[in-house]
Length: 253
Image 1: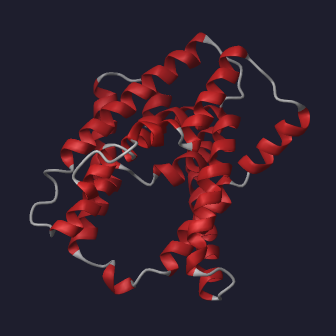
Image 2 (image 1 turned 60 degrees about the vertical axis):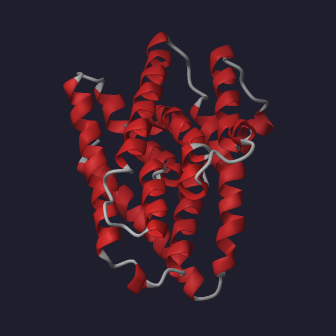
């Protein structure tokens, strides 16, 4: 990935988040809009984006890489779960739950697919979709325990019925069987998929518009940002390089 591509993507993401922020401040979007917009994104747009990511010609190398990146992601989730118990000493109990959850369930759930597709194309989108499977599972299992202290009810049902997990299963079956969708349905899925980046960033802008700026400038959030955006990625990078992981898989991870 050249720096121009990365810089352009960062500008695009910032402008779209700014649009969501300004639209909310101008009352074109309300703060209550985050729930229906998030629902639209998670239940329809992201699943379409995931299905599109599997619409590539299957070969042995891609299948092997999907297995490898799934295992890498699983290891990262285990590490994040353990690290969350030690990285925030002294944090108040109610804050600790949020910090641990944020360490375990990253913003890749919203931003991972758009960024991977923008930087690495359809193959990057495929690998990101597979990478996020363990996180979406952990969200409804270990993630729940951060707030409830138990594994919650109907965890398996929530995981199996999560739209993004269902989309992965559908996409995987399509890729393995090399099934093509009928033209009209294919265009529908692609059009919805193309909305992923815009809607994701607008939702984030909408959320930021409702945040009290005085509350987000404190040492706990500063330390959390260092952990989530610098420390963990550097550890992942170092470990991938140490075991001579494929460069493409390393970059997406």
